[in-house]
Amino acid sequence: MPLCLGSSLRALQVFPRTCRGFPIPPVYAPFRAGMLIANGMDTPANNGINMNRPVFHLALGALASVGLTAQAQVQLSGAGYTQSFDGLDAGLPTGWSVRTGASGTGLGTSTSFATSPYNWSGTGAGYHNYASSAGLTAGASPSAQLAAANRALGLRQSGTFGDPGAAFVLEIAHTLGVRSLALSFDFLVLDEEGRSTTWTADYALGANPSSFASLGSFSRDVWGGQTEQFTLPPSVDNQPETLWIRLVALQASTGAGSRDSYALDNFQLAYVPVPEPGAWSSMAGLGLLAFALVRSRRAAV
Ligand SMILES: [Ca+2]
Ligand SMILES: [Ca+2]
Image (cartoon, rainbow, N blue to C red; front, side):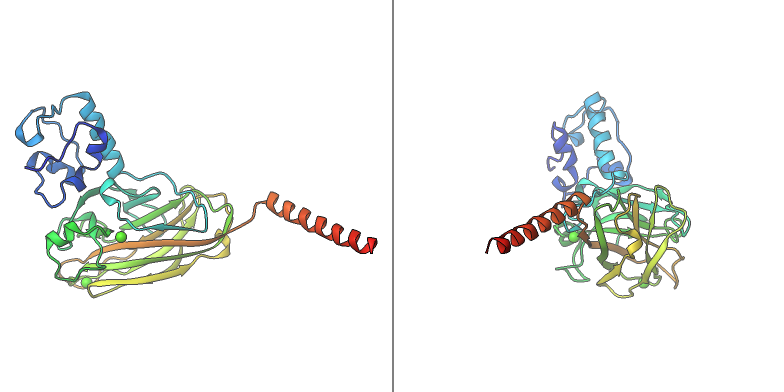
């Protein structure tokens, strides 16, 4: 059996990638369902680690918080934000949450994210760590999918999960210091089935918004990916409030039969830095200094 657990917290945090390609022992199976495990037994299946030890529970709690809960807000800096989702084995990226019960009047509820790689055709409802479609084909084997380093943040809806109301959500602390925000991402269909969902990209300002402004809608009915691009309005420039950007299933799926596996990848937010007031003052001061020097030189001639 592969050695999937070590004695350090770091080893526990990288557990899913360490075990990639190997069957997960039954004793770890609840990880997939977002549950902590504590059977209190030292068995060959747990490599002799006593799961009743406090340090083990602390480590499990840390692992759960990394992979299963909403993260802190993103702080924008530089000239853009990008997210490849290639680190999903360690949990959701900072600022991202995955939700159910989202609507046009509310963010919904953050729900669990299972960090272990999952096959496109798996029918388990929930948010999943899928292989991206890039570099693979629709018929890629489960082992090829599990081994792929290019990951995507995915979802499989069901009649009782996220249909409607699923949402991939990015929470940005504020937009102070930036303007002209533009959004792009790859929208992937990884398992095409009879039902299809129309997705909406929208945004809102505020700590707990009750209304959202639509940027546009999109859908796809074949395996593979497409790039979506939207421009946010000037009203979100240089704002002190929280900015939420969502990809949300506001309406129920249409069609019949099974539901698709969807995913989000290569999310990019481009923006232009706005000079601080102090920077404008400095620039104005330099301009006045240059003007004075030119005048003094002319006067001296
Ligand atoms: Ca990726
Ligand atoms: Ca479909």
